[in-house]
Structures are given as C-alpha cells and as structure tokens.
Image (spheres, one colour):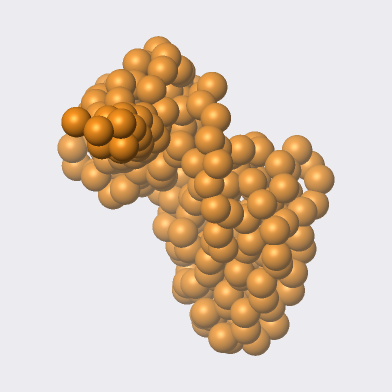
Length: 229
C-alpha cells in the first residue's frame, strides 16, 4: 500500500471519529406528577367577554389522565455548544398566549401575533426588567423584534390589557433543551459526551435536577416525577 493510500485511510478514520464525537448522544424521558395531580383550573375573564368569553383555561397545570405533565422545560446543565438562534412565535389567541411555554437560544427573535379581534399587548420581562412591550390593537397584526432574547433565564410574558394572560419563555446559552409535549415526553439530541446535570423546570412544580452521563451514540433515559412546591 502506498503512502498516499495509508494517509487517505488515516484521514478517513480521523474524520469518522470526529463526526461520531460531534453527533454525541441523546436523552429522552417523561415528566409526570407524583401523587394526586392538581385539578385543571379556569381563569375568570374581566373584560372583552365578547371575544374571550367568561372564562379561559388556566394552563399552569396541563396534566393528562396518566399524570403526564405538559410545558415542562428540560435542559442539560454544564453542556456547552453552539446553536442557531431562531424566531419564536407568540400568538395572542383566545385571550391566551399560545404556546403557553417555549424555550429558546440566546440571541433569538420574537414574533408577536394578534389573532383576536381585540386589543392585546405582550410585555416580556426577565428579573423584573422589561425586554419588549408591544401593543397589537388589530386582529392579524404581527410584530417581530430581532434578537431580543439576549440573556439566559426565565422570561415572563403578560398582557397589560387582560391581566389573566400569562406565558413563559425559558432562554438558554446552549441548544440542549426541550419542552414536554401533551404526553409529558421530551427528547434532547446531539449532546456532547460527558457527565452533566439534567434539569426540569415547571412554573408550578418548580425545579428538579439529577446526574446524567451521555455517551457518544448512546440513548439515555431520564424520567421525572414532580410534586407541588
């Protein structure tokens, strides 16, 4: 075998190893309630009942019959990696913020939409400091604010016109996060191999964390059972 062929084979092996490492591993799981789950609530509507009706769902605890918890944010603490900031969509629909909970990478933008025939506004705050506060007086109105999610942490979303409206955006400096679906399930892919903390955050249940080891090409499992704080 010539030197060229040996060099080419070594280079391919190196590239293959590098790609395998870059692929990392994944973690999946289910977030459930420990014990008796809180009852689904409703919120009283004080104004614009012609649009909002008399009540709207309280989405603090969205829990299935099998005790699976929606809108839990799961993340890998201690992981470092780059992702591409995107644009979140925050809709004022049915006098609720849709979706109720989102997660984003630092540097992401926010598009606020008004799907209701009523005045809405979206006031995003982190640690009491306003990030954006936009008014949407007409149905179908859309406003995009570029790269406004600058810092990691929990951003609270409120509407000054309708006091019951509330939502959250949880912002991370890395791309290793997920929001649970209606079955309480989540998957976080492409995590670099290593030892970390995996953390779950929920607006009503608070936070939990545990150790986790991620292996290249591995598929880890991490389930959480939450209880009311």
